Image (cartoon, rainbow, N blue to C red; front, side):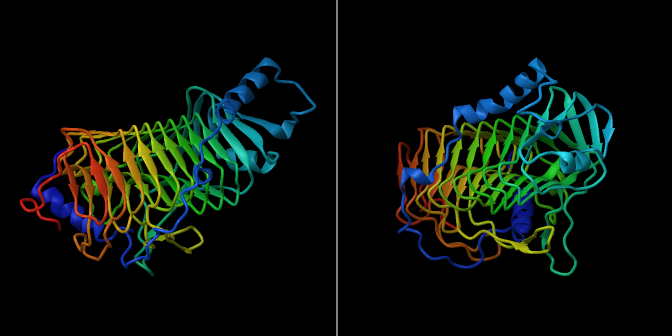
Length: 386
């Protein structure tokens, strides 16, 4: 997807509404960098979901540790069955979607810790409309299909999530629900596929996201694959994300982004501060507390995007980018942005980031005190910072 002049103007107009920080932020240079701040899910945790299913299949009538509220099966062909299943489930119980179609006519709010698992071939279609702009505030409403609210340790594994028709709003919103997970799930045709709001130590892993394309014709629509707004120590790995304005949008601190493939977006991986242009279902404004700070971004692939593979802006600082692949991005493979009004408002310079790039990658550094190695930088005398 190459950027034409028309697309560049369209993207600039669209980004005028985006949540990047619109005012300067204090330096985060004194933040500690202890490894204990970084979260990596254990192999035991990753394997536990398969074990839940295999144990159940081996002995589906077992009593004792597993009561009827600890395992709920939703048969194929279900309609509006999920809310009741959640209501009947134990805290920590499993809701198992059998292979086949399942339909929900409205938002399902999950307020207890449960595990949603899809048998191979389970498709969950949810009635949803691309996110509306709130008429009173002009902010984007995060209208979720699945709203994980005050429900830590909730996981969604192995589902195929779609809209009933047209483009959807927000597929999955985690709000105040730390240590949750979305794994091995496919999400198709939503404006916001996974949104993390005040939820820490999240595992977003091995998902396939094909975003809605409405942004291409409507500048008042935003489309993001994974939005980490307020979520420290997130672990985002092995995802394939395409077709959005932003593939992965990162704010907050101490996250890890590894082995993802972002392609056919405008921005592949975007380090910024997702500001308060969004409303939670409660009508509370959702806004990032921090710019992207102290993220480890390594072993990713970001290619064929309409502007950049990796863009670092808006006081993003102390992030480490290493061993990332990037090619055929229409603007830059990696760009570290300085003070700028390029999107219609001021964003402060990126600073103190460390980038290890590869020869052949197009890298532009207009920030402050960044360290870039392995590549000859774009000559900013010929291609000025802006």
